[in-house]
Length: 221
Image: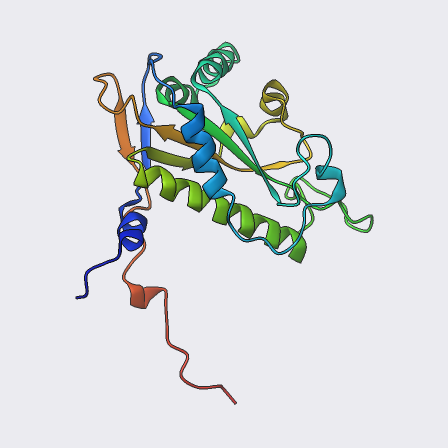
């Protein structure tokens, strides 16, 4: 087999690592490093601009994603807030261990007047919104890969309690954005005796290439 290129190796080496600690750990990532990583993540492609209502003030980008960077001190304050709210998820333990949390949101189009939102939908199931989600996911994958290249473990969480309006308000995130993922980054805490590191549940569930890819060799009549 031909040897893999450097980028192939980085992609294949990316693994989900959920790092947990019952007590707050010292740590944190350099802001210049984070800015560099996030600028690279933001080179992801997008095809449809974010709606005008999302392009106000300093956050005026046409891209459909927004990255809200939560440093170590704020992570620990957020952890304590969740504990005070009697949250029993794994999130407080991840916040105790993480060096940085990045709340990655996407910007849905305004709800069509003819569409009634229900508990099932936070946004219209439109083609535009599908494009926004796909583009934001590409930006998240970029972030995970640049973290892997720098030896920083990562966990892309669906957010759990971090999806709530109350947490958005605590972090100053507009509630008309939708969380695509809470990305936990772990570098300085990985060698601490207090941490527990869990692999992603789906790590070995992908199957071989033939189970999810096929050659299209002709047009069907």
